[in-house]
Image (cartoon, rainbow over all chains, first blue to last red; front, side, top):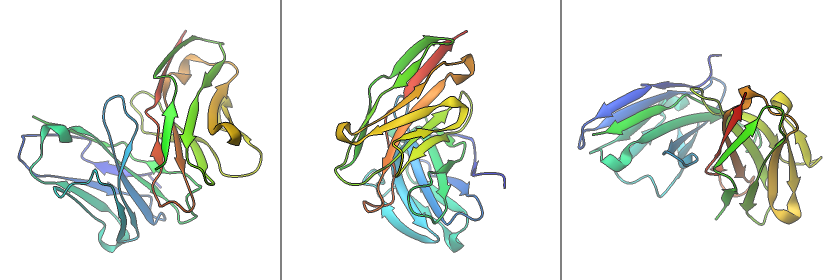
Length: 115
Length: 114
């Protein structure tokens, strides 16, 4: 078990371009979460998957953001027409199916810079 | 809506000093509480958690936290900090019935002087 993997670690893109991030959770975890973290703030919830079903989305997730988790394994987060305000660290986490009490295992994150 | 408030954004201590980081949450129901830590250059990792039983919970590396329901608080403590405790600490809360997301506080940056 290598933990939660995120790719890429860093992404610099020009405003208006599309970007896609990938997350590979711990293999036996069926819950997967995306969070966004900006400087001086804690992680903010974006969306949650249980297996392949996207069960909850934050109002932070505008229509330019889309997330998928085909086959309930890895997940992708796509941002279309990026804006400078999208610059942040995008975190992925996974957890087991034992309720909400176990806490998360986080990946190292993808740092997005929009120039 | 749930929220988490961490009292101090930055704390500077000398080695061997005692640590207490404040955390208050707003939610009237049954909660699960967590402290996560992020060491420099590393990912967020779980330090300790509480969901029932003894309100004084012990975590890794000598950390402990006390849940005081009447004060909606879950403060993190360590009797004697080390230089290696320099990190950012996040308090977090979720519920078994309030949806699937965990809400995080803004974090406290701890710097321990050697």
